[in-house]
Image 1 (cartoon, rainbow, N blue to C red):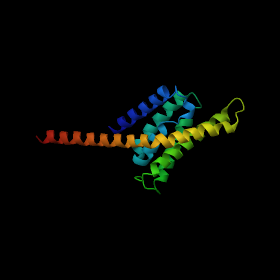
Image 2 (cartoon, rainbow, N blue to C red):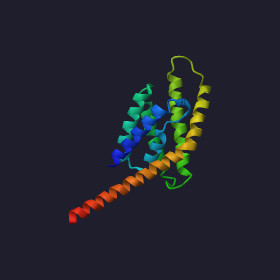
Image 3 (tube, rainbow, N blue to C red):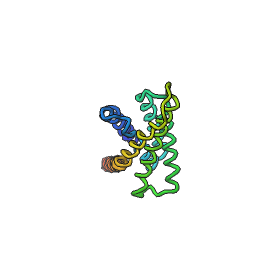
Image 4 (cartoon, rainbow, N blue to C red):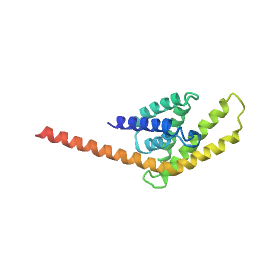
Length: 175
């Protein structure tokens, strides 16, 4: 059930990002899967998160039209970084998750931007990267914590629904 929830959330974020946000200029809005990756790193075990991250990375690499593997490797490195960071920081801290989301948006934006700079066929000035990535960081800092809160609340509601189904199943078994 948890895999289905994560895959549905992943697909909804990908569809929202590629359809609705593409109209408003995707260069200045961040990748919506970054808060999802931070959420998976902070709240889910690797056996639950890695399959979803692989599917999300391959899907974003296929949709983006860029160099294949950039999104996948960025998501995996971001997940590893969050797992490393939570060893030293308290996951329930109100300030920690927005900082992790902001750092994740900065990391993902820089990875994709520098991959574009390095692999461009024509010379592309590096100073054009700064306004795009800084805009993504600002958007990530403003909206990322709300998206993270929605993901946590959704996980809690799925856990409650699963628990009630198990209680009902056990009651039917006893009767």
